[in-house]
Length: 326
Image (cartoon, rainbow, N blue to C red; front, top):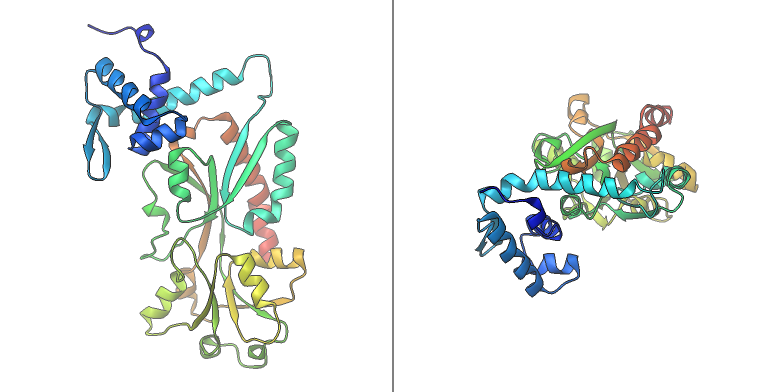
């Protein structure tokens, strides 16, 4: 006999969604700010209502049953629509919205003031939270802790950061493609030499520790030719690498996206750029598609649709044209 929705405590559906995201009673309890015992009792009630175990304990955590898996997207969509309905009463513009962003720095900082002003103009009481893009940012989007991510991926066929390797539940849109450059201080001795691959490899390099690795597609391309950079310094982001490359009394080279030149000009860093001295076909393997990333469940979320349009306005064709002029 079909059960009536009126007989189900709708708070249980939130618990079910978090269990599907976390695959853990204790982690779900932490996110709901309740005890693990309370979550276990809610899970028991859900099992009774759906007449299905919903989750099976495994050494790696809770594993959803086929029924639970089949409900995951519908449940996320239903809860998203519920949030939108709750935003409507009394206010044409929802109050108290929070924008959770994870972005590569200094990419976001270049236009963050303009972005925040646009957010506050439309949503005067909004809160904006920006975190650095890191190794766990995709998981944060999947868990619902981040609304949207903005970062560079890679095009090298063997890269772990390829767009083709994104999780099935992540949607994306490429805003622009960037080709990395080499950054040197204005009096670097390499500028007095012929700029070629031999010169590029003779000097020590600053690398970025990115998503648990201090190598990237450039190192793959060099390795294919039996070559290797001397990585003398590994730093957590492009801001730090630009700062160090601009300091006196060293011979370090930094390799970073072309957009960083825009950031350098904003902050008065005395750096010049040179192309990475590789053949055109190899350079194309280093192209970086800068990409917006969000969970499929947010595909129809008005807040996110608006935010994506603003980010495209700030980082779309006009931004790309600025990079090309520089």
